[in-house]
Each structure stands twice: as C-alpha cells, then as structure tokens.
Image (cartoon, rainbow, N blue to C red; front, side, top):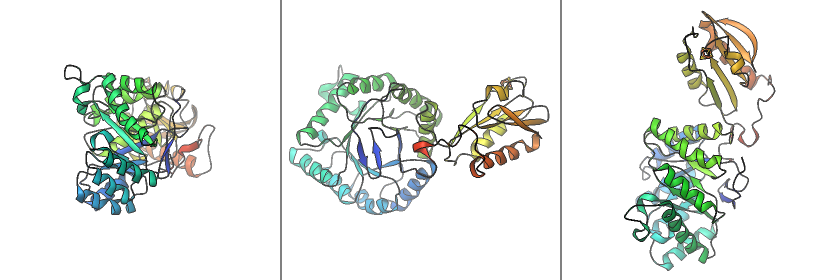
Length: 372
Ligand code: SF4
C-alpha cells in the first residue's frame, strides 16, 4: 500500500503525516469542566493505546480546567472549539498541543489573526474539521451536502490560514454517510498535501458504528489516505481506540497487541471454543506486544489454517493441541487449554523464547503509546 505523501505536523511528541505511522485518537465524553473525571478517562484511553486525545471546550469553565487536564495527560491534548476565539486563546495559554477550530467560523479577521498568531508562537497545529451536517448554507445543493461542497468548505478555511502564513494544518471531512465522506477525502487528497484526520462521524453504537467506521476508514486507508484516525462510537471511548487498532491491524498498518484468529466453529468443534476465544481476548486485551494468537476448533484444519499465528490452540475431543507457527508442540486436556496457552504466550513474551516473525514491533513496540 502506498501512502499519500503528506506534510508532517507535530502535536507534542506525536507526528501526524509524513512517514509517521497512522496514529489513533479519541475524544473524551466526560464534562471537561470536571478535570478529575476527564483525567481519569484519558488515563484509561492511554492504557488502551490512545495516542492523541481531544476534549470539547464549550465554555470558559471548561477552558479553565485545561491546565489541570494537560498536566495529568501523558499524550497530546487537543482542544475542540466552536466559534469562540477567546476559548481558543485560553486553550493555547493552557498548553494544549493542538486545536480543532474552523477559522471561518470564529468571526472577523482580527480574531482569526489572534488565534493564528498564538498557535504559531507555540507551534500548535490547527485541525480544520468539516462536518457534512454543518456546512455553510451557500454550499448546499438543494439543502443537502455533497462531497464537493465539503471540499470547498475545507478549502475556504485552509485559505484563511494560508493567507496568514499558517501551514501547520490537519484536515478532516466527516460525514455519517460513508460514500459522501470517502469521496470528499479522495477529492481533497488531489488538492492539498496536509495530513488528514479520517473518521466517520456519528457512526453509531459500538457494534454498528465499528463496522461503519471500519468500512469508511478502511476504504481510505487502503487507498493510502489517512494519517490519524478516530472511530466515533456512542459508548465508552476506550472502545473507539480498540476499534481503531483493529482497523489498522487488519490492514497491516500497525502492529500492536493481539490479533486474534479464531474459527467460526462447525460440526467438527468438540470444545467450548466460543468461551475460550472470549477469554483469550479478554485476558490479552491490555497487551502491547504484537502477537497473533489462534483459537481453532479442530486439529484437522486448525493448526494448518492458522500457521501464520505465533501461537495457538486447536481443540479435539476432551483435549487440545498447543501449536506455534502451525507446528504442534504438545497435547493438553481441555480443562488446561487456556492455562497452557497463556503460559506459552508468557514464554514468548517474557522468556526470550521468540519464534521467527515474532517481536518485530518496529514503531509500535510495547509501552510507547505516545510515540506514534
Ligand atoms: S477450524 Fe475446524 S472446527 Fe473450526 S471451522 Fe474450521 S473445520 Fe470447523
């Protein structure tokens, strides 16, 4: 896959665009004015692998909470601001690492100039976030948004910043309609080299929203478009981070934590595979080290079909096999299958007992959620 060439921007310690890996971001859904609750949610997001976090700053009180949130956060913090340039100035003053604000929506040129000057002084990039649901009225066709209108809207905001000599820009073109957003990103990719933050907005609940996001974000990433991703879900934002990594892992763009390979089960299955697969997933949820783990229903097909897995189990009648890279290494009773698999994984990770292809973490190595 050839990634689109983009001009890199830096948010704190994280680069977005250029040769940097596609980063994962999320947004808190706590009340930003409650710095303790927001800080705790950011901590959980970081634990899940989140690399950039955004908080909404709807009013002065929320802006006043930013210094405390900034002090507690170990990843770059982005302030999401609509309309009020004073909030943007307060956020910059509070030490945020990025702003999401549309310069065309904050009033006259002097207001934009004040924000741009303050952002430039602190090397803070600005994300222009176009949303199909809130396009300028003159751009709508028969009242409805189009991809071309989204691009036009983004370019208007871009030109405002460029005319002030500001190029530290990221852009998003979000819609809840996948073809609308995907076409908009494609069209804009031909016109600018700024990095893109990609996502499907208001995607839905955890199950349906993850699928919709995977399709929308996946189409673009497969075409090389996208430098940072946010999956928007109605639910715990930690699930957004998990979903984002699943999308990136499935395209081979990031290697982090477990990639679980499990068979759908069939009449050959003679162990409680659904339970075992669920337990494996749960127990390894916090793992950073890239690892492919297979949970297969039968010995006939299992080890062979999952030969690319670092380690796996295949069920039999009342017993199972532990295998590595498709090679069976021992037989254990079903009751011990999970325990033995975990021991094997522990050996692989901690025992210096690494097989070929394992541990090639590259830029995604363990324990560096802020390094992407
Ligand atoms: S691995 Fe075995 S049990 Fe699982 S679906 Fe394939 S044939 Fe059936």
